[in-house]
Image (cartoon, rainbow, N blue to C red; front, side, top):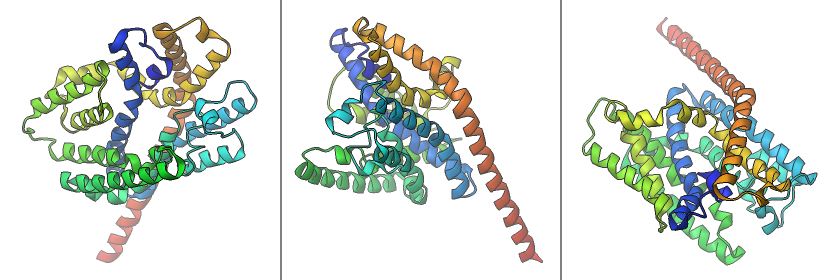
Length: 346
């Protein structure tokens, strides 16, 4: 979805094509809901906070640090043009920019946080909730608690947005911060807990819920209307909560075919790498002779090939290292607890 909007894939296909292209920017809502689900699951699988955090950070930081460093260097050297956000917000590929990105606090300066790739603002938001969400997961165990904390976050977002527009003349200082998207993480976590509770149960109106989710997911791709991001987020929450292979084998079968699993495995690389590929291909003038779906296919196929190698060389080894480190800490804690229990018994 993100590559589609950044290449204008279907803009020549009339109103439906415009809707299919512009909906790509709402892929981030899906991304954050899934991240909330993943945080709840990973934390639940870990024996403590440290192994959970190590596994999450090793999943996301190694590739991020590499791509951010590459972006700073090649933009500074003039191999590709600065991003539109860098030019619009008058930032630069300097040491301050690089260090703020590496610190994962880039959301504190809206001129910087999205200046290198044009998509990286989401990563600092995600890491923030990696750190903050686990202690508050008890709120996400119930729908009432999830709504309560989401309401607080949304009210705070609205207030800060008002102040931001008054002070800076734009909502960007709030739009690219963790608080503006926290409710999506909480609802993703709630979907995980609901799924666990209803694992061996028949969910009331399950078929109707899944049908509603599919409609909500499909409409934003063919129609432009206010709230498309919210529709996609709600659809994702419902599907994560109630969609099960034993009840919907056809839908789950489509989502689990090998090409889908392959793209899912390399999707993080695709997300981070595609802006640099687009900028590089534009620099050599290919965009002048290609438009629409042809341009999208060239970019996407190039990105998939590079992302596959990125996954094999960087992501998979560091993911495995993260699991090993987290597993070692969990085993050590289990052994310590067992020893303490033995001493108490004695």
